[in-house]
Image (cartoon, rainbow, N blue to C red; front, side):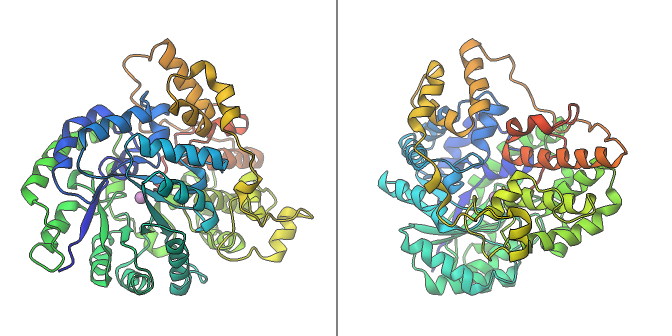
Length: 512
Ligand code: CO
């Protein structure tokens, strides 16, 4: 008997993946106590993009959301997703900010912190793991799954062992793009299971239609925990459905022990919500289908749709095949980084630029240069010498842990935002997303517009100019806009985004 545990993602990844993270706290609260009574391994309810979405779109204090959820879910551990040294923002933060953030997350009710790094560079997760353990939290370290010539079973096992030896309490294999197919999952989980002792969790997305089969093979290979979403919030770009697993595993050696009738009541609650999201345009039914391209090209489905949007903006849709061929070449040049926020956007953008300008690396955005330079950490494979020379010239690569170059920033942040401080946690909100936080704090002080804005699912895109320059500018804007949608970085790129092109027109589907 090996009881399989389920993490329910309805309150975080499911709505991040299906409705761009727009589920509001008042839509969650009526069902949380029922969720708490199911007996899930954990409720994923915070982190990822929820923090950003709370202050940017929902006029909600993310810390208050965490406290409210905790007050209603007293029995089930709460779980969050944390981007290692990037926390819930989009750059590396100083260690003092990372440590304080983790301390406050645990103090406000977080139990399990899933910590990942886009490059699988263990140095970028070490501070967060240590801080989590120090605060008495459960540190779940993460291996991001991807496919490349260097991503062998041996490499994944080595990554997993390194994280275990760092003190991780459990390990997540994170298939953020839905690329992990069933038999590959079997081999991967089996290899890791044979070499690490801590519990193993698997995270996937249903994007390519194989998610449930992947979980089943992973269960046979020794996985302990799977991430599922209650059926109305499942499938498509979200997770496989919870009820399907409870039924599939019932009366087998893997029986979850969860009550299908109780789950059915929960589905009953979410079903009208789903209808509401579809009616408002927040849930685009297109993303509920099977994205075959994800399987065909081994790149995340969302990345492909972003590329199509970028090319359309640049009036260069005919270049799609060329760009598709360019993506793996850029990825190779960039040391075979996993395609996850932010590397997926950076590599996709560079591929579009390489094709549209007609010369590889004629234009290199600062994010591309930062990856090559080592500012995001060590890439899985070394950057080829000719690319180093072309992009960095005589500049040297960074070989230390990127955060080693960042001076403590907690106190200077506090100084900058002290006029807005109402709770200690506000310092962290500001440290992570300064401009969005400031706008949020001002509204909190002066009164939120009522009712809070309901975000439009998509705004019409302004046609780009036909000239080459116009096309390139539009491509860059579009590319950067993709980063914005996923990363919330639009405050950094306003200066190069021509007016009229909304950062939200390219509804990214690349999820974490
Ligand atoms: Co995810």
